Image (cartoon, rainbow, N blue to C red; front, side, top):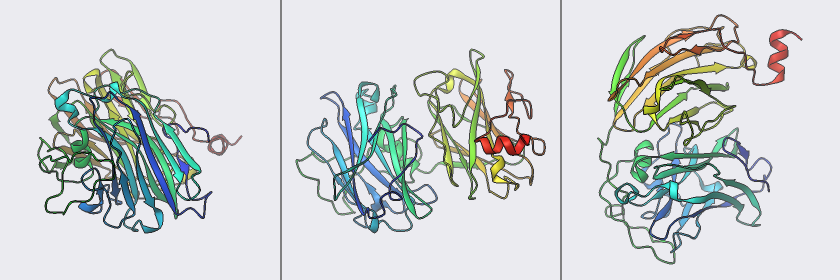
Length: 406
């Protein structure tokens, strides 16, 4: 089977209706002094784990429902794999996220820039047939955690989403993002066989979170702005509740006055300017995620949502679309859409001003395109933006024909 690339979502069960159990193997090539661990998160529709016992890692190698089990090998150079029984995953679980992290990477000054040949291989547990092969071909810098990919429910089937996104802060940062409050570290010694579960009252936990355990959540009012601490990585998500396909665009201006946009046709890079990455095109209701790896290299970013012509009419408001910005240092800012507009294909939702050396200003900028206008917005060097003046980019040929009547 040909390898897939980041953003190339792949059906798992649609073409394999008899598939019940799979093996998800994670491989890497790391220095002998580096401890790399695999973990899995059983996540609900709200983006958090469904319960504490559904975080599968070296100290808790089985989920509460026994549908996901970690087989951790002794050598950090050998594969760690997960056995997954798809029939036993509760309906409350929307997806299972697979990650690799460096144990105490921040303290030891170790990072994934020194790790190569990271890949995920999914096989049919019964036939040993390869279903998915996802090699991460792009490099990393000082990240100490990577979300490799996830399996998720879609229209009654399971699909695989190749992510390959890096995180700073190791396993603790991932835990925080998935709603887990972590305590003191007590990593067990690795053994040849899978590590047995420890009782819940004494189970091992990942490294402690140094920031506040519960993030400060701020919801912006119309045209309101807020300053939060500038961090070394910023995550922004477009979230919505609808069957329609929305697309997240991140327009940017760098410190060197270079302009551009990150979107489904240009997913970006964590190691090349402007150091912005889109996790991929969702192609369904839910969430799309942008990660900004070097905020200090940027002046402004503008987050916009696009609703393709094929979606028909209907307001972004009714889709409950919103932008959520997280500095991973205790502040989460939400910019909701507050106006009803049934005929706009574009809306600019939120903007970040990075020009202050210590803080970043997040602004609610809800602005819509003209009715039925396909022209995208443009962001300028001074942080201002204008609707309906950018290029037209249709998602498919049908939309082009419908729009121009040719």
